[in-house]
Image 1 (cartoon, rainbow, N blue to C red):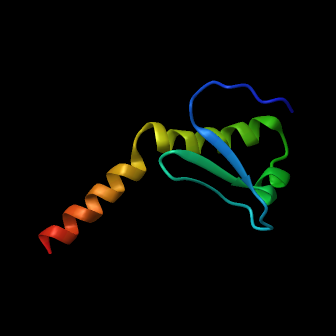
Image 2 (cartoon, one colour):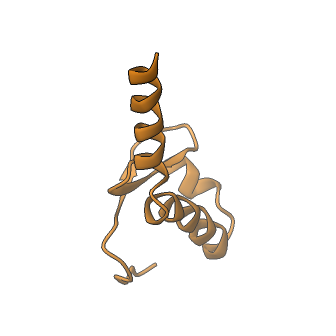
Length: 74
């Protein structure tokens, strides 16, 4: 499979035996086990796209801001 750049988010593969994928607001991480579990390129693209959406929509930043606001209010 050949990658092409369509956005500025880096996708990194992690050497783990557990299928998982996550975003940190700047990058997307996917484990080797998740890649091997995907049966088609479309399944892998869906998984990566889902994690990209978290970064694009700013979910990580919003979650952090909500946590900080809750801490301040408490």
